[in-house]
Length: 256
Picture (cartoon, rainbow, N blue to C red):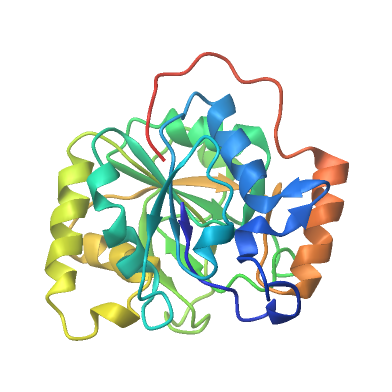
């Protein structure tokens, strides 16, 4: 769980705590996320903290620290937890709420790499700027066909065609994909611009190497918390939709 940044749009409420410890419907944002993982038997959870890391509730998690969080981006935080990539692993942004089926379907994927892409209209989670282009749009008539990620960019017009949706910040890595991801991360660390690189840069680098990143489409049913309006909506979402479902069965143990 990448949770090192303060959050550029939340300064008013993060003076004494990191974004992941903001209260949402009665409990910290991070606790919603941890509970979601544990309901899917993902019990080995590493959280990479940075800003106000000392205020993170460490119950049920391992805490890694990105001491250079103020000068670095997401890949530097991921590198702080690279030793946790020992089993099949979910990589997650720390500011997510989602319905339980999204994580369940993701961890059940047998692909080396898989991501969750939201194809719902722009009005949903408008602050999320990880636009995704995929090999096919979210056409329910194509059910059963594999769809793959082609690129992620914050520039909605970068590809000359409309994006297929938005990456919500969840990625599953299985089997040989773990070593491939670690090797690519190590390679990117040799670049002069590594401190500026985010998770989309890693996804794009894997795609450039010819790796297949399978797409799991959703239409809503999640919230990202990037500004004060998102924070308010997150509370509404938690109350109205109960992101953590009670329908999880027994799952193989994995990492997050």
